[in-house]
Image (tube, rainbow, N blue to C red; front, side, top):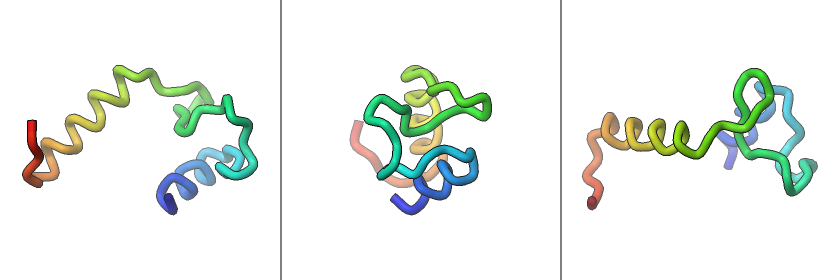
Amino acid sequence: MNSIRMFRSARDIDDIDEADGDDPLFTTNTGRAYSPSYLSQYITKAIEESGLPFRQ
């Protein structure tokens, strides 16, 4: 949760507690929401690179 707050602060986005319910949790540097497919690819890559055992 702290990492999410730091990310939002770095992007100059309202804190989670102050944001509208419709606001994206993460935004690009242009303020737009990341697409679900991009986030899926990013998370998959991070999991693979972590070297931690995950079930398929």
